[in-house]
Structures are given as C-alpha cells and as structure tokens.
Image 1 (cartoon, rainbow, N blue to C red):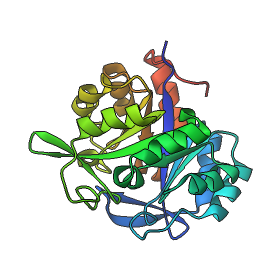
Image 2 (spheres, rainbow, N blue to C red):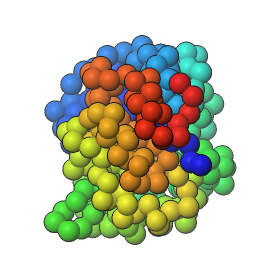
Image 3 (cartoon, rainbow, N blue to C red):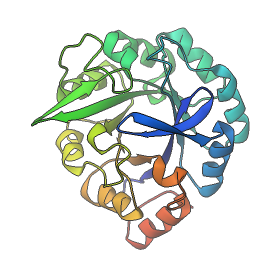
Image 4 (cartoon, rainbow, N blue to C red):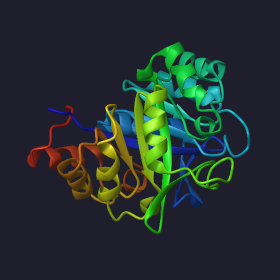
Length: 256
C-alpha cells in the first residue's frame, strides 16, 4: 500500500522564508533554520526549499543556509533555485541536501534533467512544474510563475510531464498555480488528469487549507505526497495533527 508523505514547503528569499498568494505579494514568515527545525520536530516526512529569487535573478541558491539546515535535520530535504548545471547540483548535495529540484532550468535546457539523473541517480532529481489553467488548457510557467515559459511560447503541462519523466526525472512536483496560497483545497481534477501519465511519484502542491484537504487528496488521487506552506507557517494546524486525522480516516502515512 502506498505510504503518503506530508511535505512542508519553504519559499526562500534573501535568506528568509516568505509566502505569497499565486506567487505574488510575498510576506516574511521567519528564519529558515528555525522553521526547518520546527517542522522536523512536528513529524514532517521531508522538506522542500525553493529559492524564489534565484532563477529570476539568474543566480544559484546559497550554499551557506543549506549546510546549516543539514546540521539540524533528521529528515530528507530537497532544494531548488537556479540549479543550471551538474556542478551546481553537486555543491548543493555535498552541502547536505538529499535531492535537488529544477524548474525553469529544465525548461530552458531539458538535457539537464538527463545529465543530473545520470550523474546522481534519478532518485535525487525532482522536476517542479508550475501549471496554470488558462480556459480549458493547462500551461507551464517558468521563472517562479512569472513567464509562460522562458521562450514565451506555450508549453502544455501534459507534454512537459511526459517529457520530464522520459528525460530522467525521479519525481514530479505539480504546483497548481490557480490554487496556490488560497487554501481552498488541492486541484484534484488536474492531478487526476495527469497522474496516469507517470510511473514516478507525483507530489501535489497548491491549495492546502485544512486536514481534510489532505484527506481528499489522498482519498481521490494516487499522489505520493502533499506539499503545503501557509497552513503550517500560520499554525492553522500542525503536521502531527494532520497525520493523526489521516490515520483515523484510514490513510496510510509514515509514523508520527
């Protein structure tokens, strides 16, 4: 039976954790290391850190805070942000990260997915996809949701999910931009539309507002995990409370 994961997401900007709504109007949440420790202690299965300034400013995520986080965690964590080469990824993994995630760099250079997978193994390579529903079509956006793609041409979410997996992605995080930060539940219809295309784990992102949203996600989709930010940052509910609720409803999760 599939064991589901609860994954807090920490958006990083200027060495602080921030959170926006649909990728805009970001507010400061707090210290990277302190929040990482908090979620570690609450029973998170893993953490994801997105440096939201890196790709937009043509920079790579800072190694300094990655190494500090690694010293204070007992769970795996993934890092994203301007990773444009095998060498960029090597530095991040050597600093203590367990996985790297690429989004815009993968769009501009799809071969990077294969290069990273060949060098480090597909289990280390996550492809993040920012997907926005435009009328009846799901489109991929780059540069933290600010561009339709790096080439200003339409890239269908369906096509990119298939290609990313073929190129060597070991996991896909699908961030449903229409739901991001609004706490109205995960985009179940979009997730169901695309999960059948994958043989690698699919992680849902965008929309978690309650414990029941996680239950609906795991009850109605085959997603391996649910990624969330503001529900945990604002102490609406703790990770332990989400897990306890899921257990009572028969969802197979990791130990709390």
